[in-house]
Image (cartoon, rainbow, N blue to C red):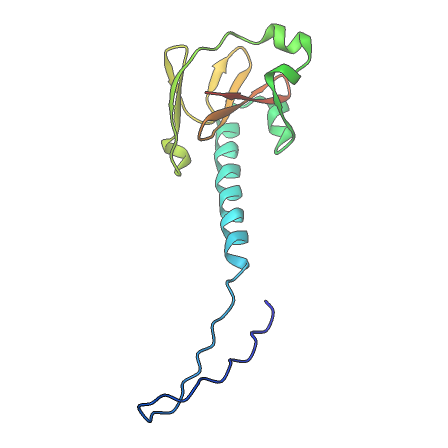
Length: 141
């Protein structure tokens, strides 16, 4: 962090007390980075846990934090093979274990297998990231 500028001299006070200089430290840039690392670690742990259960396809595991496509950007053959999904609602929480989404009338959590090689990788505030045939794509709700 850059060194703090020396405090400006305070004007003498009428009460006869000596002026007091207060130095204010600049906000730390390390805190947001640490929070970002913690968030990434939590996501990684959730994905690793799901991978250990075998609920995320190997291709999606290898993709890690690879590009997330929109459904329209997926290749035609992949889009054609996607199972039909009806999203009935979702609940987002800062705690990954508490997140859930209702798809085709069933409740799913991050890392769950939706069927036919389709995995629910991550639930976001107004969308979800799914993994299918090595592609990660986002659906909004």
